[in-house]
Image (cartoon, rainbow, N blue to C red; front, side, top):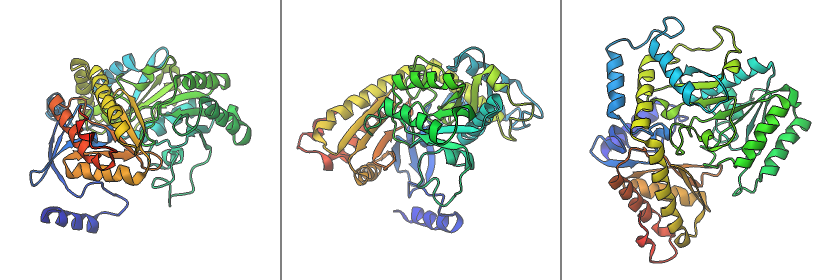
Length: 428
């Protein structure tokens, strides 16, 4: 570690609580598209994307231009005090694209957790019920309600109890974890018989593809039967697409991969290309359930973030990022599949568009590969219930040459776990 970074680490330890942990021991000075630089000129290829925030890359020129233009007009009024046209226009654009049945409406907030909490508020107002069912290994946020909905204790719930009442967890279907569609549906029925009557449940909330949980995708059959189950009891179905939205899976929203639609959908992260913005969209009659003043927030729908989000939608469409996600994801999946026979430490590979993950037999292996990759100039993130999964969240705007370079680094970073001398032959 350099003298500068060592000093910064000491300053951080003195100034910040230990709960604000960081992955890197270096400090970013600038960024562009898929590259990060520290203050000493060292660079890294960014396969973390600010935790799925930068599908359009760091400082996309269109987004910079949009934010700069808004800066010359106004930076804040609070929409519920003095509204502005750009907020309404963005809602109109999202309403046209969101995968819900019939007319949609949208409200903007600031963080992903805030969007999830408001989706629950809307569902409770619409159904006049209180219960919420989420899933094991889910991640929905760090606020008190979303922490209760999150299906992982450490580090998210540990030391912070007790949790809010009326939140229950079903099993998320995953073949690699030995949970079938039947078993997942049976766990829901068990909740109805053991914990809360279905007539008291306002909403079932799930990630179509679990993010922090390890990039497990809900099977089509499960989603279809979950929709039927929810309808049979008058329960609203909420998709948390905070991590899976905005072209990451090859569609604007992951729910577009399914033949059914949800009642409410939450989004954030890549919605505004690095600016803090989240949203809840849903069926108009459901969204209209809360009375005036029931939804909002001082910074909700900040005009700078709204301007950035308009630019994000333009970039996704004009640069064909949904198709790009499919192309890059297919290349990465093929690369990992070719590497798998030579690397017995790989236990599973999961891919939907560019929402790609590789699971290892031991968390220590995933962490060692992550560490070696960083030493070689590639920033990776782990996830999963055991921390044994490496996920890939590169900008969809990454140049082909840099993508190939990243896979070369990944190959060398995994070389210690190859079973023969031919591992270097694996290419992108």
